[in-house]
View 1 (tube, helix red, strand yellow):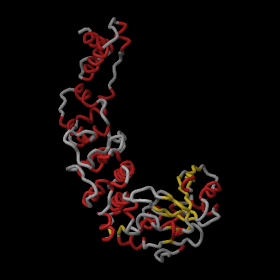
View 2 (cartoon, rainbow, N blue to C red):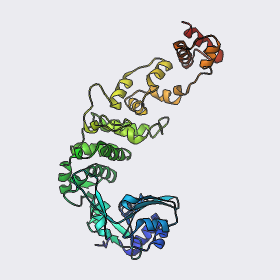
View 3 (cartoon, rainbow, N blue to C red):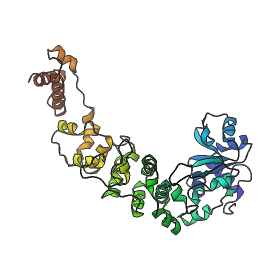
View 4 (cartoon, rainbow, N blue to C red):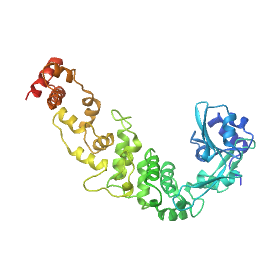
Length: 393
């Protein structure tokens, strides 16, 4: 099925302007090749470039090798990633998928046509393709263009969320990003989704993709409204505060925004490893929940820079961001100034002054750093005197 919404000339010109590197692919292809998925969706929405995914009705690895570009092959799925004019392009052979049980990874087999490949995708708006060869037709077998115009997310079949429950998490990402509504039957199916049939790692990966979006707070709000997650109290406001902090100095680039926003939204998330508590409420003690530990840090009121450093040093960066988002303004100076303060002396200087190996060395250096932070030990001589006095106590 092709759509009449865009003429062949319109489509060819849109693709050429957004993705000029694909002319190289069109010239090298010996089998029909199509631009698919999010790139087509965003093209029709007028949103510019997106990740480029191509599907070949043939051998994707052979096409990648003919392109003469740096390629990374993924033989299991018949896919390759190539670099063209500085852009990454994923090339895949047309394939179909089947799921041996709900939530399992799919069994992948070759498919004969682009229509068969599109049938395995998540939503109608992502199940469109544009032929790179002439005529540049829009292949739209599921009505994706009409759903785009109506602002609707619609799954392709009734078993979609059972096959892959992470599609429910993707629904929140797309709905928040594009301000789309769920088609009524899609919403009914989504609310019945069992996220417990997929591994914690897969859930976390999809939640992190949502958390990386500028519209992440709204996405988590949607998931909570659909009954798929149990966010912490005030999650939306905290996530928005965290996202704002990480866009401004001194917090910009301090920690990966996706990890921090996810920790703000969901109890038990944001640490470096996944846990089965990703969809569960926080415990009173905080446990592995960085936001709960950050709450205790936010309540602290250090009187001196040395006390602030003692409280903050060695903490997970996510905890620091969350504590600042909860009002610990003193962390701005810790991040910008105090954490960078270093002594001019070291342990060798204390050994040379007769301090023996052992706890006294650490005690002396700790005292000297505290004094320097608080303005009481300016210069090497003052640092050494302070350190020696503390070490000899």
